Amino acid sequence: MYNRFLYLVRNTHKYTLRVEDYARALDISTKTLTRILSKYTNRTTKVYLDEFLLIKIKRYLLDEGLTLQEIANRVDFDEITNLIKFFKKFEKRTPSEFKKATYLLNDS
Image (cartoon, rainbow, N blue to C red; front, top):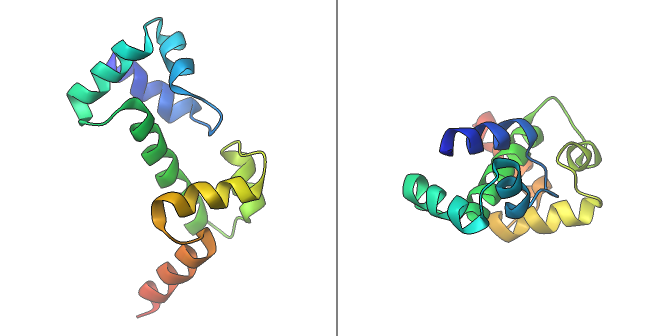
């Protein structure tokens, strides 16, 4: 079940997908899904999904010059501002600040 969940996340994850959506796709309850995830990752399903999405956004930010709008579209945010708020919640800086800091580190 854990491997099926990972497959679903890696191949379909978007911001709009919720824990309930994955549980339904796997034909299990959200509680069961969270219990499985906790066993293997020590994280709740929601935390795992947020972390996965954050990594995906970071990869897009460092990719070949994608705009924030293009990234928002790829991860299914309806507004760029929601993408920025989501990113800032976890990184304590905006996507642009992250990208700039990363480039400065790579130039050193």
